[in-house]
Amino acid sequence: MAILVKSIEREFLLNTAMRERASLIMVAGGGEWNVLISAVNRASLTVSHAAPLALLHKGKTLDFRYNVRGQTIAFKARILEPGDKTVIVSMPDAVYKNLSRRYARLAPPGDLAVSFSFSGERYDLDFPQSQAYHAPGDDYLAPGFNPADLRGMMAEFEQKASGLASERGVVMYKNKKPEGPIELLAAATGRAFYMPNVFAGLPLTDPFSDRTILTKDDFLDYFLGNGIEKDFALDEVVRVERSRRNLGIQSELLVPILFQDYAIGYVSLINRQAGMPPFDLRIVETFTAFARALSWSLKLHGYFKDAPTLGDQYKTEVLDVSAGGLLFACRDQRLISALKENMPVSVRIQARRRAVEASGTIRRHFAGGEEGYFGIEFALMEPEDFRFLFEYLYGRPFTDEDADSIEGVRILRP
Image (cartoon, rainbow, N blue to C red; front, side):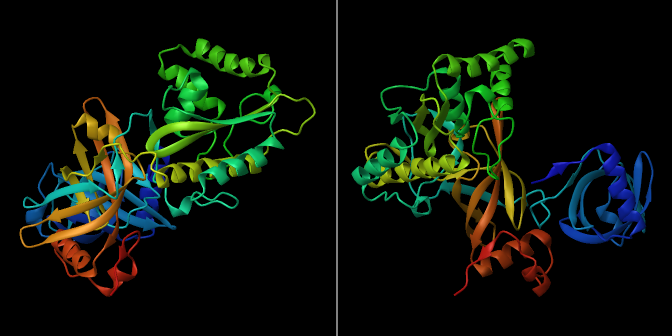
């Protein structure tokens, strides 16, 4: 994921690139040019280049990227003084490192049109929407839980949970909605409420590599986001912790059941019996797997069969595009609500000479006000389509070196 560096680190990275004569890629006039930083000062950079002077106009913004010490760095800078062999550009306001994308993004060519559709069946359900997105499938299979046998899976849940919790169950949001900060936050984020020991309070960190459990900061952000001043928000977090103790709970786990971008219910385990061991991380993993398997089982058994689906082609306002993905803007509020990170989509790119089909995934998501911005990372493409797109965008042949450095886009082979 791209990380915005602070000003001190920005100067260090740029000076390191100058000292080590790191080769930068400069994007200008629809092409890429190898350049070097020859001087760095507080307000500007001097860049040595061999690009045609006609491409370098004062006030124009250029894209730069390079690798230094194992990191990919990228920034934009405005031309202050163009020249035949050197160009002076402004000190970039923002420098990003650890970029996951390999190819530079460019403004879309004038004849480019892009549309996308949801991959597979995308349902329009009357359930609470979640910021998380999960596409249930065979990868949701978990040891001990067989989604093809819903009755047997529920019996297995009861058997596993009964030896751990004094109270356990599955609650669906079909005839009720999330209530209280715990259910509301779990549904909105797709993360589990986990208190292994209520006397220790909410977890301060999430030990899982993928965000899985709610932390104390998540609850603080929730209350702050609801307009509560910080001191009172801290009191609300303490009130959540105290409420579990007042109910006589020793250990608690609430795992949201997610289907696509909806929270359709939750799995609950509560232990009120003193002396029983607290829920450990293995229990979190087991019943998170059960919640996912249950979501897939409900799909297999027709739980959503009467729900309307979304599957139309949606045209996009493309802001920039690369051989590895694109960024687009959207003003359709229904679509903004439907699009989530990690959601698979099908993309059609129409140029004057050719149409390119690709599968992709929503990787970046920002929705603010009346407009949303979404980044699609291409995941699968025919080799001739990828070659055409690369050469169409960058104005140069696709080489074996480029093929060896493809990251993220899986090229279909015969």
